[in-house]
Length: 356
Image (cartoon, rainbow, N blue to C red; front, side, top):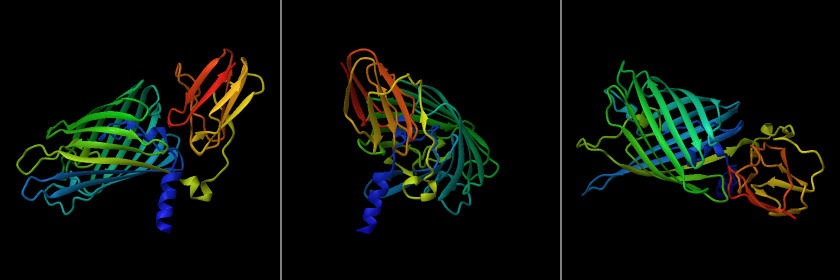
């Protein structure tokens, strides 16, 4: 029972981070996300293949991703794939591939409107191959376009066989909780079999987790695995099915030495005057579902959660930028009306300001 309680705590206490949502990246593209400082991101990708009859044997292709946010738009991470194509070359002793990487995002923020760019140097310990990726995302409204250029010093376990790869993807968010996505990637010389994936993605309401159901012919999520489709024994395209689950863990919840008091901050312009109403953001909800003020009054929102939130008004999608921990946002309401709002990274958080 103690183990179950600890696991429940880890899942329930893990905060959501907009930059790590599957609603903003296609299955085989790492995208441009980096965890916030002091946040560990764990992604579990599991794909499988069922062989034709009479055996109908199930072959599993799991990939585990673990990344630590360093702050300043940087992250350190590792991927472990138990059936990587990097282990299929001549003389390979194993198909278990460990790929370590670092990601730096010099431009933009994943999920924010406009262009975001990230650089990811990596190393595959199984293939003894240095690798790298230059990725870019462009978001407008419910659509995100993705592209990536990759390079490896040794391809799929072959000695002295450096190669480059190109990849692209599309994500379309049908609403705040559901998206569809697809991608295509391939080495360019020699091309080989292209890797493709398609997914139905979900944000789990009231939780920090995202989940996707996938179909693909890529065996792993490493840079090499995402650039090469799996080929069946008869030479045909082998389709894998599976899912991916994301789990962000905030170290401040478990390690006292990470609990430094944040510096108070106000985001956006601060109108002069004293707020007529206060709303606190805590435990992934607005503590007041509705506040009523007179025309011309100020309302202040203060974030006490360990992750950033927004106050986004639904009528015109205006509102605050990301409000950091211990930060606040103030808005003046000059016209009578009903102003519904939500948090963009966590759309299950909702509230209303009624102006009389």
